[in-house]
Amino acid sequence: MSIDKESDIAANLQIGPTSLGMVRIYVEAEGVDLPLDFDPEEAEEIAEEIRAAATRARAMAAK
Image 1 (cartoon, one colour):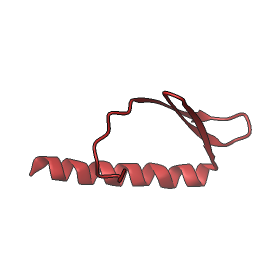
Image 2 (cartoon, helix red, strand yellow; image 1 turned 60 degrees about the horizontal axis):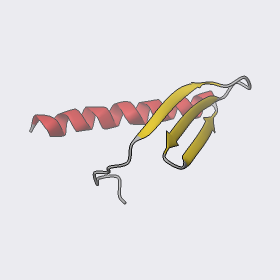
Image 3 (tube, one colour; image 1 turned 120 degrees about the vertical axis):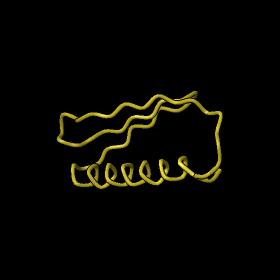
């Protein structure tokens, strides 16, 4: 599956700090429990990528 294909998979997403000073993105779906830990700088880079993707998605939807 590529990033540009629709999916019927449903998942829960939780984001928060860990007790060790990391940022955890936790993905839970049927048969999947995926904790992903990032240092704060990496988490900020991910946040910037999400914001940029949202901006591009809005521009595409406006067409």
